Image (cartoon, rainbow, N blue to C red; front, top):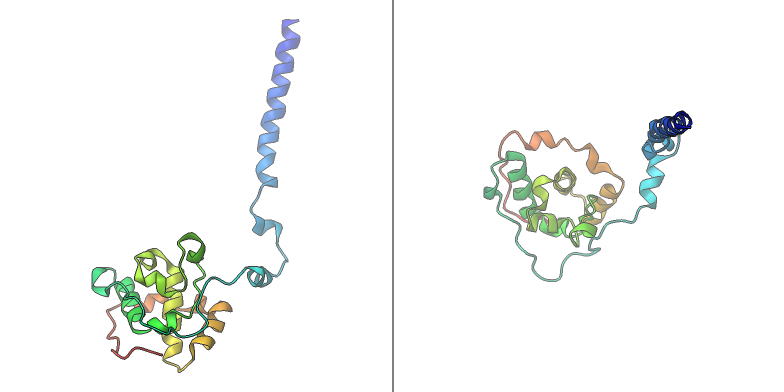
Length: 171
């Protein structure tokens, strides 16, 4: 009888172990399960993060000073943000800090330290800066951000040396 009990427990243990080994295959990441699906359609279904559709009526809060940051790319990001605040006020931020931190637009990332550790915030900022210098309107820049064009920005070029950012604030 003891042998039968030990055999039953052993079988149960073996079945449990095999089940646990098989489980990760079925719980794989959704990317594997969604092969062949149009990934851009997923992004379209996702709600657009918070932004302001029009230029601000009053003043805007100051961004954090670029001089506070020793990392060149981060310092450049904050210096740029301080010059294009009105444009950033009208842009969504696809790191979804509107959900996690209550931000109302991309500008809020630069009023706080949030953008110091966020590549998305920085690339969107650099994209907005580059497009502003191509005379794009904030609405046109927003459309590009929503299409994901900010992902193509080479942020490394902003990490090389401190930029001489012109003093004129854009739009």
